[in-house]
Image (cartoon, rainbow, N blue to C red; front, side, top):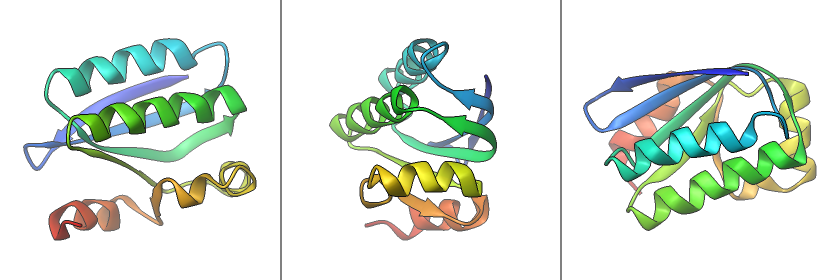
Length: 115
């Protein structure tokens, strides 16, 4: 799995994820992204359009990231989630934890609109 951070709108970070998020890479992903959150970027959009698989360990990594961002006054939103990954999120009821948007533009707007 690879991820590419891209800052937009000054205080919102878009992270494009490519590949699968599972036990082999979840710790590194969490460590690197939480480092960004602790560095002051607590409003994150995870762009999942190239996410090919998501294991329970990967879901755990997203939850840890969500909790850390919340402690910093931020939030994590998901966008462009492919069908198979959305099925995993729905089965685990993560669609109740994360705000999920059909595309990056709508996720950006959600941060602009506020709570």
